[in-house]
Image 1 (cartoon, rainbow, N blue to C red):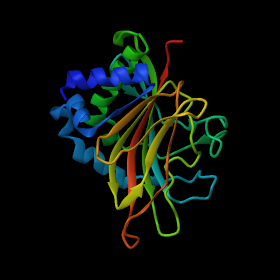
Image 2 (cartoon, rainbow, N blue to C red):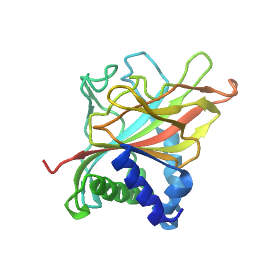
Image 3 (tube, helix red, strand yellow):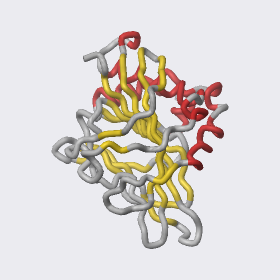
Image 4 (cartoon, helix red, strand yellow):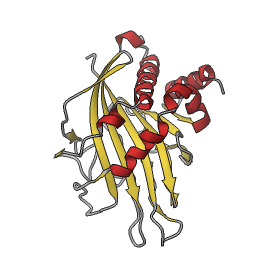
Length: 244
């Protein structure tokens, strides 16, 4: 699919269905070869994530790093490091407290992959919201997640269950899967009517969501070969409209 057609399908899905699944091949077209030259180095930054010490379920299966950006149009500027906060209504497991995660490494935050992706998503979400790209203003949160699975301990990508993130728009991009099965993404309506179910299984497979209109969740992952390390890496970007 051409970049133009892929973007049209992405925008249509967000407008009509409140979510869109973009396969890796289409995402490659949207990001372009110039930015994707930097993909190996960007993906390698997931090998240096810090343990999430805020898991109220006692789990030791999640590693992450975190950063925030201010976006005007398609231009992103990194904000000073700050805590992540969700209300209990959005995250009944870990919400209600400030969580200070390790910061995203400078080289990952400045990657051409991320720069291009942020610009693409800003323009896409602005279009879906009926706003010109030039007028778009977003607070963006970047989450690098590695969910590890071990014998006797499932890896839980969304331990809080099916949820909203409490923002306007969400993008989840698969960075890689190693020796795991499971990790099925589900999307549902506010009344929990199933709207879609699929697995992000190839690097760059992406799902975008209108967080005001749908809920989402991901099933646990477990090792295919219990004797070998197993994990699922994703990039999550959330966008909150700052024009109001």
